[in-house]
Amino acid sequence: MKMKRVKAAFCFLLCFVLIGSFSAVGFAGSARITTCGEGCEFYPTIIVPGNGQSSVCVTDDAGNFIHDKNGNQIAAFPAYFQVDKIMARLLMPLLASLATQRDIGFSDAVADVIDTSFGINACDLDGKVVTNVRTEKFPYPYSVCSDYEKSLINMNIPFDKYATALPKDHLYYFAYNSMGNHIDIADELYDYIQMVREQTGHDKVNLVPLSQGASVTSAMLDYHPDVMDQLHKVLFVVPAIHGSTVFGDVFTGRVSFLDSDYLYNGFFEDMRLFDESTARLIEILLRILPDEVIMAALDKAVAHLMENTMIRSTSMWALVPPEDYPAAAQKYLSSPNMASIKRQTDRYYQAQLHAYDNIQKLVDKGVQVFDVAEYDYPNINIGERWNKKNGDFILHLDSTSLGAYSANCGDTLPDGYRQQNTHCTDPTHDHISPDRVVDASAGLLPDTTFYFDTQRHDLTQHNDVILKLAMKMIADDEITDVYASPDFPQFLSGRNVQKLLELLNTAKELKENGKSSAEIDAAAAKAQATLNNNLAAGEEITACENELRDCLVRVGAAEPEAAAKDPAFLRGVSLFLYEHYGTNGFSELPVLAVRALFARIKNVFVK
Image 1 (spheres, rainbow, N blue to C red):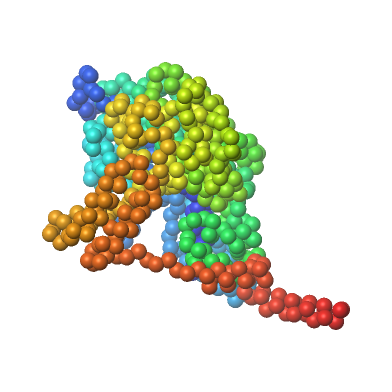
Image 2 (cartoon, one colour):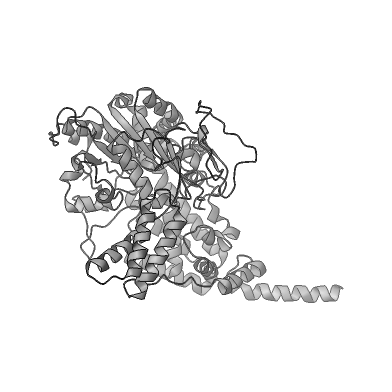
């Protein structure tokens, strides 16, 4: 059954490397909620989250949420996986194909599973979601949210941990369906801003668009330019301003794992989601079916996902880079029945082309605009260009940095390189990163863009420095540029503090219960000091994590890290099979071996 999970994982990653609705009318006439009066020092702040950071759940025909056997609402994003139905659909074709070593309906069954699972987010030919899903939204500030609603928000943006200096009645979370209609969502964001202004009595708001949320914001700025006068600060966090090359490759048909040689030798390891032992094991297990059966199943899975779900979602189209859009539109939107969707995607394409101009207009109007970008982490290898541009696992740096120049991941700028100063006119500024990878002077906002080295996009919420920086910029005007605070220079390190925080909590509980030790206290103090140092690199965080865990393991308060498996044997098997038998399945190996034997015998007689 592992084969079916592998294919499901393919399609999940293809869709996302990611990820009752209230209408615009529902925002009108909102009552005043905050009690602040004239001269309030805080502007209300609206978080515009990224792909999959809103709760979108399955409903029945009456619009009521469906719950699983544990009483939890069933998520519709990125798909609705009904395991029993999936097993029932795949089992017989899989068994028949295994028995005959031919495609006896297996690829068709995989395509059906893709359609039924991802089809929960399907849109019609006007780009409108037409299935039974509903997004949980929050037309009021965080302070009014229920405990359940706060838990939904904190899973994505840990307000309770990092927004301690902000009044909760000035914090808002704009939820939306990442697979929905992009124009409708942009219009909803505009109306949401009007609602927040009315509820708070403030004439201006702060916006914090994250990842895909930046594409929504970019569209709104282009479709509703009057909103520029209603903004105080805009803080882009790893923004998909110009989409992602991952989506560009997928929408133009450059899917890397459809190359069978790469699939059987390197794809899984390059994903950086598996250790090498697991990656090599998958390569071996793929061979239980002939490669033509595996490739047929993958070809149909990709085709069905694209043609029946992805290309009807205008929000997915908004993640295609502008340089890829014309070719992608020609590939998928040329037929007359796609005309309505193409009109909408053409409109956003123009917004993409105007994005830098619109952001510059904000700056010219006195709006404080900041950006946070991440770099030197190769993009996920679903698209063919995964290792051709610098990125953060999901988005390429050109997009998140608003045009900064960089060397590729693992490389540095050429010897003698001098910064381009495309957008920086101050000759005293040094915008080249200490590792000589990024030239920030080429980005649109050279003095207000912060960069985090080797930070992975989908782990941004676990980088405490990014969150502290964002909350600091929202809370006051101390940080005006990359030179304002020595605690937040332009170039910082990527890090993941999730595990360290958990270990520190364990150490704290031991101390409170009188069960700690001098060794644990010392390791915890060192870890906390490192955590408090914004300049500490990811390697330092990991070293403190390992030291504190070892102390806790010795007293039975923590589990040791699982030892990495030695990949040598599985690597050897996989490479032997690939080098001697290519991508052929196990059933084909005897025939190939006999052919090789006869070839050798023939060579002997010929000689």
